[in-house]
Figure: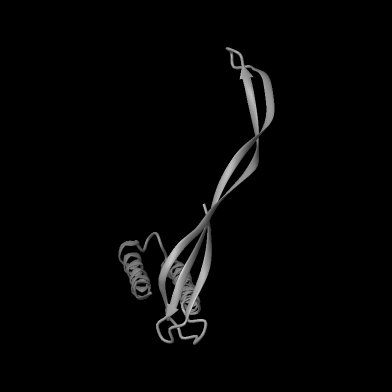
Length: 156
């Protein structure tokens, strides 16, 4: 944010100096020079506003993530933030799931001269295997000592 607030006005000043210094008066009337400076200033202003908006959105997302982290890491009994400490975890199991995916294929046959002789369309069933792992995590609160566990499913 600080870089954008310094860099964009500096670029604008450099453009103004370059236009005044190096653009000959014969090719531009004084009004034309002012129009060029105004256009460059307008473009840089739009860029500056876009940077400000993206910075604002970034701060909003960071605040939401921090709030989610606050809720996710608190004790369910005393509700104090950042109280969750992981004691251990264990894998409860692994499930294998097979699904069939339908794929449409087209085969073409050509002769020596590159002329299409025949086209064959077919469908295939391709098995897709997914594994779902189930984990159980054990936690305790560092403030009140309350113990709890949570289950997590990960699909690969």
